Image: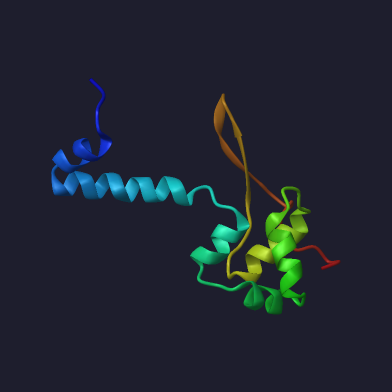
Length: 108
């Protein structure tokens, strides 16, 4: 007999259900597209474009790209009020934050 996920969740104690829902939200938040990040920050393409000094259409194209220069990604994240950092993950060691790659350089 197959389990109905909704029934299983409904049978949990309210505190456990709340903790599970919070953790699910954390996991979902760990991976977002640029568009999802912008929307989560409650920003419009127009407001991000204004911060970047580009047109709204350019922000739309940026959000659809799968391959960005790190400097472009950094500027976009900063336009949303954040900071970019890069983490390298390996199976045999703890994660490592890469230094100097996503930081401002003198040419910016």
